[in-house]
Image 1 (cartoon, one colour):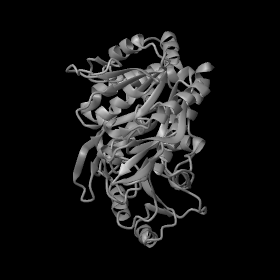
Image 2 (cartoon, helix red, strand yellow):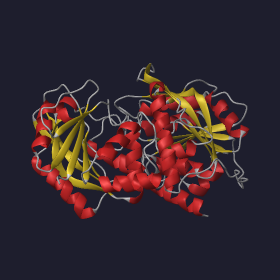
Image 3 (cartoon, rainbow, N blue to C red):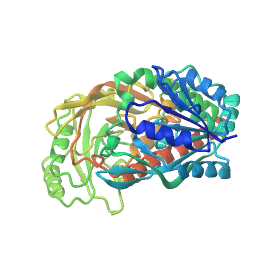
Amino acid sequence: MNKLTVVMPFSLQSGFERTLRLFIQSPLTEEVIVLHEDGFRPTSPKCKVIRAASLASGEVLNDLIERIRTEFLIIITKPEDIEIPPATLERFIEVAESTDSGMVYSDYLEKKQGDLAEHPVNDYQLGSIRDEFDFGYVILFSIPAIRRALKKYGPIPAVVHAGIYDLRLKVSVDHGFFHIQEFLYTKKESDVKVRSQHDDQFNYVDPENQAVQKELELVATEHLRNIGAFLEPRFKNIPQSEYNFPVEASVIIPVRNRVGTIADAVHSALTQETNFLFNVIVVDNYSTDGTTPLLTELARRNPAVKHIIPSKFDLTIGGCWNEAVFSEFCGRYAVQLDSDDIYENPGTLQKIIDVMRSGDFAMVIGSYTLVNESLQEIPPGIIDHREWTDDNGRNNALRVNGLGAPRAFDTALLRRISFLNVGYGEDYAMALRLSREYRIGRIYESLYLCRRWEGNTDARISIEKSNRYDAFKDKIRTVEIMARRKLQAK
């Protein structure tokens, strides 16, 4: 018997027929299944048709898995846009058999303006549970691994959008995923876009995607139960503080080389109207563009501005936060403000602290509006992260890549835990760590204007850096899942 069943969606583009012929002609292929809603008519007995829009449906996937009689299933997500050498199929199967993996995927090439560019992807790990993990466009599943997983953890639920997500999570519990670090196929230029870290990062807060996100949350939550990392909504009380704080709140602004925006940020903080004392701690991480003398002058004219230059030279954003939090100036609550953003109005700080005081919260997260350099709103507008709920927010937080802003923290807890000394994901790591034990408060109205401009550190980044960022957040989730497993085991 041949070893492969291949599944791919139908496409009217010319490349579809080329890819279809490749699989039909391969001696490794038993059957090629084309998904098509309008009755695509195949010309080869090897080709069959399933009337369906995509494999995202749980019903379609369950029926498909039931009918497959081969050892392996290959899913091609965009058959019209890829070129697959015949040797690639042999390599995928060879690796799958050698490693006994539940899933195999590989790096690939991108055709850009006639040139080939490498597109590596990341290794899969325990914390790679976000639904947008990049496996590329060719994915091989072990059918025995699928059947064992579905027998143990139940069939794919009756979802419309999250079927493949549920399948790969269930297979991943007891089976390894193998990343072949070889460029085994080519992605055509037609769908290659300039990589931007925030191009798609707001999909999960778009109101139009709420039905999709709810399905994804249900699937991810069940996965956390399957691996022993699900947390019930039971929280510890915030411990009594042992510190005497000089003020009730401190606005924390880490900065390096933001001479064009830092004055606006500081002014936004200083003009907050509150019924408590607060200060503004700016941690100047050895700026070289004129930011330092500007801050020196602002601090001279405004006693509430505390201008700190660290004694260490190896700090990034998280390390700068620690400098502020452990300083003698820090208040009972530490409130975030980025050096190129501003608070939406003079009442922002009061609203945040009111919520911190109103409940037993380790942290409060607000909502913000995306704006351009001229502070004009840009799509998708308000980012409110309504996927957070008190009952399931700390579980669902492991599925998404961020939790929102502005963020406020109980300073005494920050002094117990400390931020990671990293320049990306330090806030996400802290939120996960705190939510493991304590309640997180939410404010769903916009409090903050977040500028999107070419000076943003994540505005345009290479695929290598994007992979590094994604792998780091996956690692954060891996550590957190392992910690939650230990907590549950007790």
